Image 1: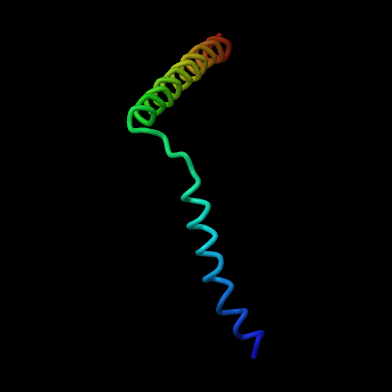
Image 2: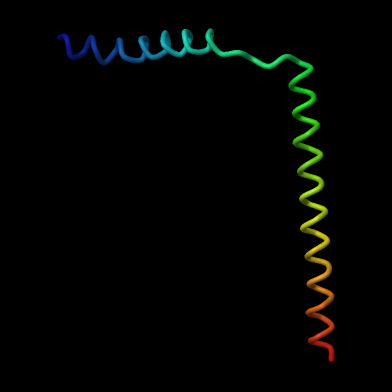
Amino acid sequence: MSEKRRIFSAPVEFIREVKVELASVKWPSRQETLKLTGMVIAVSLFVALYIGGLDLVFTSLIQGVINR
């Protein structure tokens, strides 16, 4: 009977531990979240434009070599 009790109490214990851990998390403020989100978007756009530019250059070079 103790095995059945343990099976049913394990998920409950897990949920309790999750609540304790979430209570100790330091969540970012709204200002920090907006600032970091803007930085992620800016860096992503920069990398996308950089890789797109390299792709354009290399595609033009390869087409130039093939069309000779």
